[in-house]
Amino acid sequence: MLSFYTKDQELIEEAYSPLLILGMIQVVDAYHMVIACALRGAGLQDFVFRAYTAASYLVFLPSAYFMGIYLGMGSTGLWSGIVAWVLVLASVFVVRFRRKDWVQNPV
Image (cartoon, rainbow, N blue to C red; front, side, top):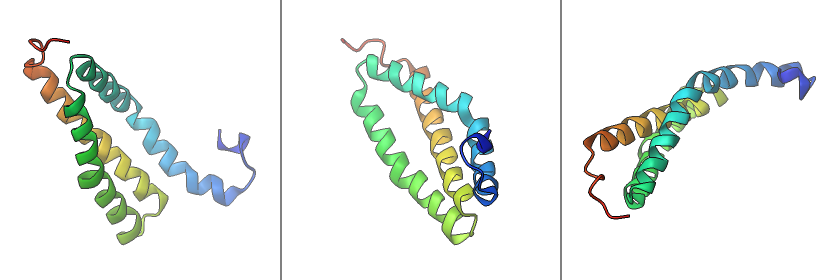
């Protein structure tokens, strides 16, 4: 698929691992977005905003730096930081959604 966009073999090899990683996380990513939108619709916009902000600064940035730069994994490590971010957000949103304390919120 990458060869449709470029003929540079080095670029194709560099992009292969991150693309594979992102392909495997798509279902969880879509799930986290659906739950986040449900929480926003239930009036918990502030919670969703704070969760995204906290996960970005406490999970994504440190893990992307650690894997991509410190461990020398390059772009695969940087994109793995996004995977960690999505997994944390999905977990946080599912826990909050299942508490059902948002059901009583006036919208």
